[in-house]
Image (cartoon, rainbow, N blue to C red; front, side, top):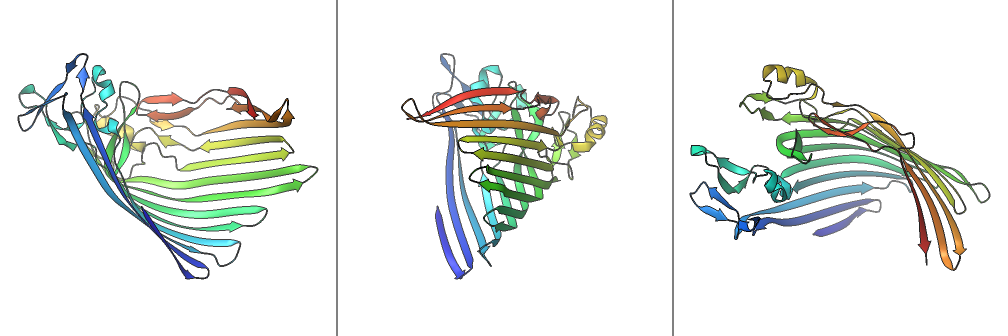
Length: 354
């Protein structure tokens, strides 16, 4: 990792960063009970579990350039250009811990003669790469902070949800050759009260408006039918996110109410065309609902500190209520599988500072 900073002018700063990342994913000594496993390869060899099953290495160069201009003490303008790569997870190569339940290595293979033969040098899932362009403005005073940022993220081989889950409900990822995420982020926080007698009151708000679309992706059904997903929303990405909080503090007493809103998103990459795809090839999907409805959840956090309590430096009593109004909602989904959000949770705790 290297970083260099240049003062181009008294109010202009150029930041240049570069990172080289090397990761190795390897599985050795794989057993099924007391016996070593074995796999046939395309080259005609047999790979035994008492050796190295596979050793996949990833090396990435991630550059980043940022420009910051501070025309006044309150205002900042910034720009960012970055290129980043990320390797798949080990589970995208082989969920070996689930082999007993049927998990298999996710590498290129053939089934000539009804026998599976692998090429352990060619994983099915590729690393994802992203070109990130961002611009923004920040404003800061003693009582107000605000910022506006726009981003354009161009992904190549992005790891996206396939709309399927494994036997444990974990999502199965795949590569979309090209996707695009474009949006705007707004943040603001203001202090409405700051008084030694009446305490302080701070409110904050943040929101993201984005458009997340598949640019290039061809999906193949179990029958081998090819359908284009170009223009569809990327699964799992809501186009509207918002959160706000109101925090009051008076001496050792602090109370905060937080609201989180998540807009509608899809459980797969079929978007509004799910019925169309299923009518064309019923094996593509055996369900008709892929929409996760928008929801809003409130959380409450209360803290009361008692200094010099029974020889302690401070005793802090905390009451935390998640999902204050016990809202029923789906927090996520994968294809036909929808996962409910947690119901109201009340947590009472005590922190002791010695």
